[in-house]
Image (cartoon, rainbow, N blue to C red; front, side, top):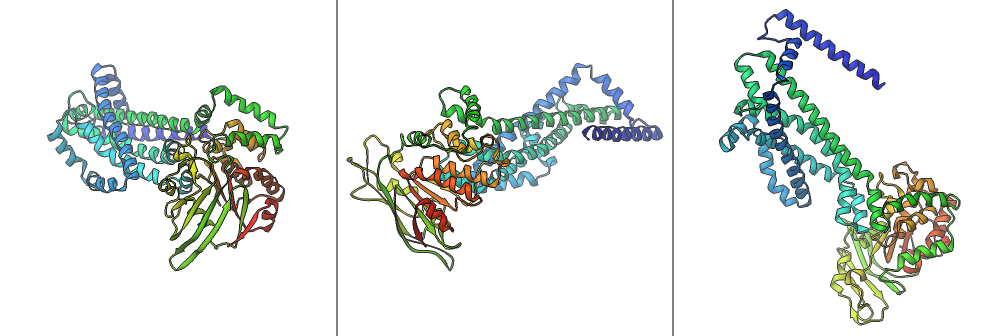
Length: 536
C-alpha cells in the first residue's frame, strides 16, 4: 500500500513538472517563466561554487538560531505562565502584539534596531515564539486532571510529574507547533533577508535575481529554500519524536535503577521472575505476603503503632444540596471499614476531602496515635496534610520518636479511585513502581502483581490490558504505596466473582498496619472482608 502511494505521488509530481515545462515552452520567455530544465541547469551551475554554500550556511545558521531561541524561550515562558497564571496575564499584551503586527512592519523596526546582519534572527524569533508559547500552554493544559490528582495523592515528585504526566501530553502539541513554526520561520526569515539584503545570504541572491531579472536563478534559490525547509522540518521533528520515544521507553531503566543497587542487570532478572511465576501465577502464599510486608513496613513511621483517624462533624454542600451533614467517624488501624450507602450519598466526596482534593465546609479530622517518647509533633505541620480542614493531633497522645522527622510522622494517604487513573503507556510494573518512594523493590512489586495478574500481562502497556486487569493494577499500587490510611472507592468494580474473592484475600493482610476504609454497594464485599459496616 505504501509502495503504491509513493508511486502515485511520484506520478503526480512528474505530471506537474511536465505541465510546467509545456507552459514555459508556450510562453517562450525566460524572464516571465523559466522551465524546470532551466531551473535545474541554474541550480547545477551554482551548486559547485563556494558562495552558494556560504550563503546557505549563513541563512541557515541565523534562521535556525532564531527558531531555536524562540523554541526554548517559548517552552520556558509557556511552562512558567501555565504554572503562574499571573505571568500569563503579564505576557498576554506583548504576545497579542507579536501575533497582530505585520511581519513587514517588524522587519523595518528590526532594521533600525539591529541592522541587516542579524535581521533574520529577529524575524524568525518574532514569528516562531508565539506559536511555541501557545502550543506549550495548550499541551500542558491537556494533561489528564485525574492523573494529576493521583500524583498529588501519592506524592509524586515534581520531576516525575513533569516526565511521566506533563511531557506525554505536551509532545503532540509541541510537534504540531514545530511543524507550523519551522515553515513560518523560514519564510519570514528569508523575507527579512530580501528586505534587509545582508551579505552572503540566500535573501541577497533572491534580491539580486530580481534586480537582474534572472528568473531561473530566482526559481533555483526558491527550490533550495523549500528543500532546506523540508529537510530541516524532517530532522527536527525526528529529533523531537526520538526524544518522546526515549521519555516513553526509558522509564523502565530509570525507575529500576533508582530502586535497585545492581543497575541494568536487575531489569533482566524481571524476565527471570516472569518465568518463575508462570508456575505460581495467582497463588500468593503467606510467606510471600510476609516478605513484602516486612519490606513495606521497615521504614514505616507508624510501624507497630496503634492509631486512629477521627472525623468530627464534617459538613459539605454543593450549592443548595447538602452532601455531608455532621458526619462523625472513628477509624482504628488494623481494621477494615466498609461504607455502605447508595450512589450520591457522599462517599466519594468524603474520600476526596480526606485526600485533600476537595475542601470541607466545616468539621475536624483528628489523628490519635499511641507512641512512647518525648517529642511532640507540631500540630500545625500535620494540619497541612488535608487542605480545607484541620487535622489535629491528640494533645496527650500524639508524639514522635526522636529519630523521626516531622514529615515522616505525618499520616500519608493512599487510594483506589472510582477510575483506575493509570499511566496508559506504562506497564503494570512501572505504574506500581512510580509510587514506591524507595520503600519497596521492584521484585516486591512484581511478586505482588503476580498474585493478581497473569505474568504475561505485567510487562505489557496498561492500554493493552482489560478493564478488570487495570483495576487490579490500581489495587496493587494503592496497597504497596507507603501509607497509613488507605481509601478505596468501589475497588471491586469490573471484577468477576472469582477474581473479586482472590483480590479480597490478597487485600486483607495489608490492613494490619493501616486504617482501611472501603466504599461499596455490596454487602457480600463487607462480609468477605470481615469489615465493620458503616451506613451513611
